[in-house]
Image (tube, rainbow, N blue to C red):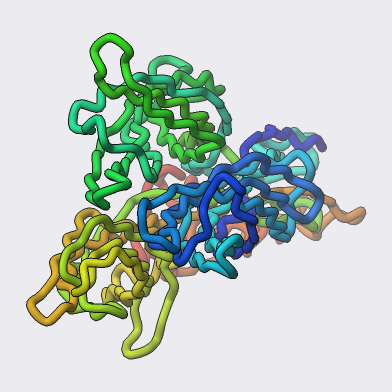
Length: 509
């Protein structure tokens, strides 16, 4: 007897996790700057320098670059101070090896700055990390069994449609662009920026995946003498080709990205005096291709001549399938520490969704809203407030473990009493995961002694087809074959037999 096997190679998801990592640092102010009275505001961008898989864990390191706007004690001019916050995070997980492939998406949730003294800045950065780890794997599927005729082996085969990750690719590239800054006046200078990546489209052409998206950049410019601010939003498109194995137009490809480094420098053209922004953004994209395949597998075996022993185990393939989306509209009045007269700039970050039971069951997240504003005295101040967001939808709730969220719109308006009216739309997306279990026949053993029968006369047994029974299960129970039952009853083994049908079962006595 020979088990004929096919090797299925794929990538298995061994970790999907979202965490918040906090890191703090202190920095002594250079002698080139005056003594500072307070920090007006601070924003940060996080860059991933390294993501290494080791046996049983993932090591992630990078830097959060914090831009702090500081007011000197004499109140003469706002100064921009760069504070680098290096971080390292270890996340442990089963089935991770040194050969695992790691994807990391990183964003700054919020920055907590303070002046320890006029010459020392302290900054605490809360970094949201979404970690995905894939491990190359393979499974052997028994698709047929070759045996001797006298073993009278009966083999049941089935076709299974399975979808799994057939390839994973990483690619690093740099977006380089010179942008005209027509809206920026000669008296203004850059005082901060936020960068994020938006992956918009993936197309498959032959064995190549074409990923398109944008680097979304928001700049803050100020006149350091008059304290007047303005913001500029623009996007830099990218298009990258990834060569991936075993893909076609029917594949589903998931793409994530992280920023490894960014340099944004504003210059002035010597001849025209026009402001230009030189952008250099180092990016890594991580693509996972999911393909559907029909897999033929032996799902049951028995012999009509010998007692049969099987060693089997289920071979499971799980994969993302349909997406469900829901939008939650938020309309809240949010008080800040001081009365808000006008809003200069804002930033919103959403934590990873969680399952909650109070006040009622649902999917919950927390929005961190940071405002740079002028108070009733005309002073520039900043503050961060949290706003709970919940989705009470039972249909979405069952898939909360595969849920993500992001805001699609945000508006903040000061009210007459100094609070802030916040209107925000939050999009929740859950991705269903399906699982196909294919029998994995590891071993088939036949007994040494032949079963009784085979040399005596043929007998007939009368039975009825019960619910959830098949010709195969009845033939196996009575130690005969589905073909012999079909012949005795005048129909084909391919026909669907109605429940309750009376059957004649030929058996050896």
